[in-house]
Image (cartoon, rainbow over all chains, first blue to last red; front, side):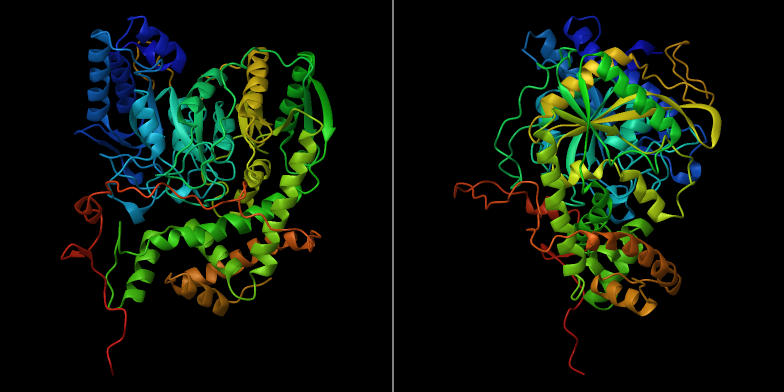
Length: 528
Length: 98
């Protein structure tokens, strides 16, 4: 049995131990593969392991991964070890394992986007993010579960079964990047990449006690990121510490000439600002992103967070984003509109599923009926309606104007303060199935995260404490603090997050009566 | 606004999505509720506001006009559900003369 400490530390500590020769990249990969085989509900067989079908998953299986590229990961690790032994200069994080959301393409494994539409499709190219990771010798362990085409806030919209929250296996990990969050929280990878369109990194990070960041729009290439809403989609890191997250974001943010929305400006160095100091900074509390709809436990942790920031010497001031309350309705017109257009490419011709029918139009419609799940159909319908003749002005155009006003609100606020804060999510992790029949209630999860998405600003979630779930007296579940920064000032949000993290001392390891077993406390065998 | 089942069928046709009668019956009230919520954007005074479609004003991006390797044809076709003579194959698009 491999050393359990290898799966319960930080990415930077693993990198340090590998550089120091204390452990090999192969040992690090094997420790993670062992734990995945024991706890994730995969069929650990062959070069690429697959997550079990929903009906065959056990009640304690995390189901973070849809596919585990076991052979490729071992080979990459062996190659790193050989090159290190030969004296080759390697990147500082060479050998650190990572879980990749299944919406980013990678050669040699299926990319499903959590959908039957793409079941079995193996992409012919690597996403730019995937290439950047490979160049850095980060070892990809596999592809993680997600809400179908990234549409959802619980990962329950995956066609391949729910992912469970490592803090409470009967609760959701958030979404849409729930598999990536569960992998890092569940000791199945120290790093993961997710994507965030309206909160799909930040909300699952909050619900699983992790750091998760949505970089400034345009700083991370979208090439090879299967598009949901192109003007909002952005890949970013999940990690156990702020420093780990900043390091991972640093690896993937750069200009890409093959993404026409990639910005050419460089973002300030993310690691340099991690000095644990926010004295003298002005931090704005967004008046509109609190109060009604936020759970009492979340509000209490948020209030304590503000006191902590003040005790660190930050000046806390209340600021207004007057149009933020219109952010959610605007988002639920803009994102589905873009989705209805982007998902037109799934027509049974170039990739994935086809349901045969006598004419092309009937084939298109039958294929899409069979390949898409209920939430994706709902969003396509909303978007198609919002863009259709007679409704465009009232819906899509008006939402796009509201977007302008929200971006102006951010610019005005950042004239007065260095960073903005709010709760990341109005709730702690909720029970599997508890919101599945009420789409609008599910959408309300995104109320605090969509404003920064619409404006393009960088935002992250950092663990702020634990709170009781309203439906489970005595429970203790993670709560996240959202930190938002001016455009291209991702370094500012990391600086604030780092100081806050140092003062908070949050223990990221899941615990509780239904938490996944640690392994580190025992022999490496996992409680099941 | 309330969306009727006929309107749901119309939108589904635009979206090239066949829906069962049960799906239509479920979607009509759901879409009505979601659109009713989203209609709040209409209460924001924005007549003189320019729309934003993108966080940064998009500009045309052109690369140098140089030949580069493209993806291999066979690799792309390998992911397609139906291929004939190195092409994507589809059912007939134009109806036969009746």
